[in-house]
Length: 531
Image 1: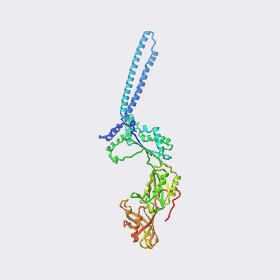
Image 2 (image 1 turned 90 degrees about the vertical axis):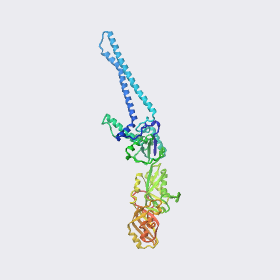
Image 3 (image 1 turned 180 degrees about the vertical axis):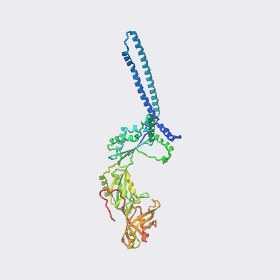
Image 4 (image 1 turned 180 degrees about the horizontal axis):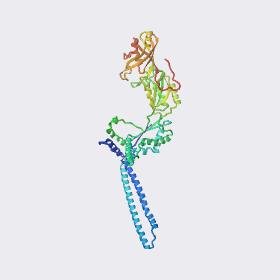
C-alpha cells in the first residue's frame, strides 16, 4: 500500500525562507548562516516563552510585594515599643502607612507596565501570524508531528488499509519524509548545539532521536492496535506513507552549488500518485516441466496477432493470480526454450511475481494446494518445488547464468548413412569450443555478436541409418539447433563439418538445467517424461 500525503493545508504551512545559495569565503559558515534562517520562528517562539516566564516571575514578585506592607505593619506593630503619648504613636503610624502605600503603588504601576509590554508584543506577533500563512506550524517537521500523529489520522490510515480489501497477518510500515526535512533537522541540531554549549559546554548530547524514528514510535503502536496485527520489520504486506511539501521542495537546491560532486543531474519525471496505490509484489518460485511441442513460454504475438492459445506463463501464473487476488504477474526463468522444445527431468527454475496481491497467506499447505491445482489444470505443463520467497533472493536464479550447464537430447537427421566410426568420433569429443554468431532466427530481437560456447561432452546412439540420438552436455546459452545444422556457417565448428554431410535437427528436449535453486520441497513431484 502506498499513501502520499501532501502538506498543503494553509493553516499548516511553515514560513517560507529565501532559497539563495550561500556565498562567502567560508562555505561552512555560509551553510550555518543559511540554516539559522530556518529557525527564525523557533527563536521567536523561545523569546515568547522567556517573556511569559518573566511575566510570571515578575507577577509573583509584585504579588509578594503587595502583601508585604500589611505583614511588615503587623510585625512593626508587635515590635514597636509602648508609648504613653497617644498623639506621638498616631503620628508614627500614619507616617509608616503612607510610605508603605507609596511603595505598593509604585510596584503595582511597574507590574502593569511590564504586563502591558508583554501584551503589546504578543498582539504584534499575533498580527504577524495572521498576516503570514507560514507561521502556524513547526519549522522543523513541517507539521508532520503536529497533524499526522493524532489518533484521528491513525484511524483514517487504518480505515484506508481495511477498505483496500487486503488479507494479511502482519504489516510493515515505511515512512518517507520530504528531503528538505533533512536540511531543517540538521539546522535544528546546529542551532541547539550552539545554544546549549553557550550555556554549558558539556550539556549537548549527540544521540538525538531523528524525526522519522520519533514518528514511528508515535504512530506504529496505534496503527497496530487499530489493524489488529503486529507492525514488523518484514512482512509480505507493506504500507508506505509518503509525505510531500511542494512549497519548500527547493530548499535543498543551494547544496548542489556548494557541493556539486554530491549531486548528479537527473531527468525530471512526473508521477501520478493516488491516495492509496499498491506497489508490493509477492514472489513464488519453483520448477516447471513443459510437455508440449506447440506451447511458447510467453504469449506468442506477432505483428499484433496472437498465434497460439496459451503459454507456460499463463498456465502457471493465472491460477496464482486468482488465488491471491493479484492485479497482475511477471514470470522470469533460468533461460527459455523454443516453442517446439520440451523441458523434462526436474524442470526449469522459474519465479512469478504477483503484483498487488490482496491475499498474503503463504502457508505450506496453501502453496501445495496451488501446485496441485496448476498441475491438474493442463497436461501441457507441470510445476514442482513451489514455494514463497522474498524478492531479494530472486538474483540467485540469474547468478552464474553462463557458468551453469544444461543437458539436451536431440534427434538428428543425416543425409548420408551413418556408421559406427561416426558414433565413436562423436563420443570421443570433449570440451569442444564453438564460435556462434547470433542465429538468423533471433537476429531481429538480439544484437549481432559472436558468442563463445563450449560443448563439454557428446554421447551418440544410432537410431537408423540416417538418424541418431545425441546427448549434449553444454554450457548454458549454447544454440543447439545451430550447432546441428550450422546456420549457414554462422556456428563453427558444427555437426555438418564434423560428419562431413548435411545434418538437421528433428526434435530437441531440455533434459536438465543444472542450477541448485530453488531448494527442493517435500511434495508430490511433477510427472517426469522420458522421450
